[in-house]
Amino acid sequence: DVQLQASGGGLVQTGGSLRLSCATSGVTFGDYAIGWFRQAPGKEREGVSCVGNVDGTTYYADSVKGRFTISSDFAKNTVYLQMNSLRPEDTAVYYCAAGPLGVGCPPIEYVSWGQGTQVTVSS
Image (cartoon, rainbow, N blue to C red; front, top):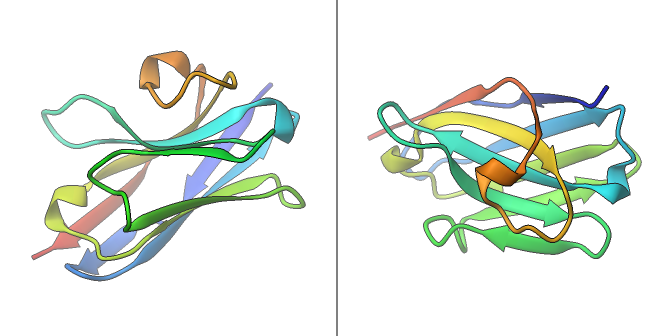
């Protein structure tokens, strides 16, 4: 079974930083894309950033470009999301998920989901 464990959320002030971690197991790390998604109350789940671990192809939502960085640690089978210059509109539950390579970052394409971690950015 593919399992993903997200962690690292918390409460931070505007302009602060957090690093989310997505630990994976039961998956050949290089065979999948791993993505970070978020869902705020009353809003649809959206793709934040995804990485295809075969060639390192990355995707970022326009709203986070230049502020968030996704990275992979193959030794630890873990994907990180470094979030800098956080804004109140980044407040959401963040999820990580595994999906097939080459599909970009639409949530519907990702088939294995971890539990979420709450990120709250205070103004």
